[in-house]
Amino acid sequence: MAYEIPVTQARAELAELINRVVYGGERVVVTRHGKPLVALVSAADLKRLEAAASQAAAEEPADGEEIISTVSRLGNGDTGAGWSEPRRYGLTAEHRDPGTG
Image 1 (cartoon, rainbow, N blue to C red):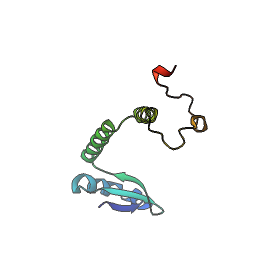
Image 2 (image 1 turned 90 degrees about the horizontal axis):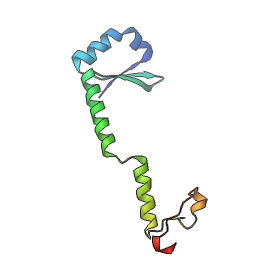
Image 3 (image 1 turned 90 degrees about the vertical axis):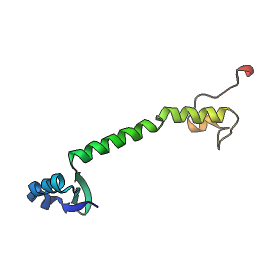
Image 4 (image 1 turned 135 degrees about the vertical axis):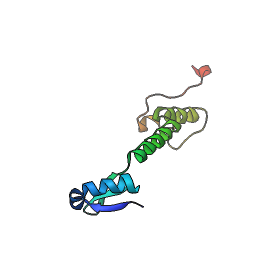
């Protein structure tokens, strides 16, 4: 659980907050009007967060890959809702079997 502190108070106590994060292992969330604004985390925590985000991004398919997969699936006989009206959804290409010309 992170320690929350209003931005006005955080300004006055910045050195103490940094010490709490670095030496106490705490995470500090600075709030404005009760809503989270920024977080103070140790450099080690930041490195772990960046590594986790990088790993998660590597595991997710790129946007284009997902679209191609969906269009290929629809073109192979799986008729999704509204696929009979491709222009209605801004699609400019239709899948046709090579033998149909």
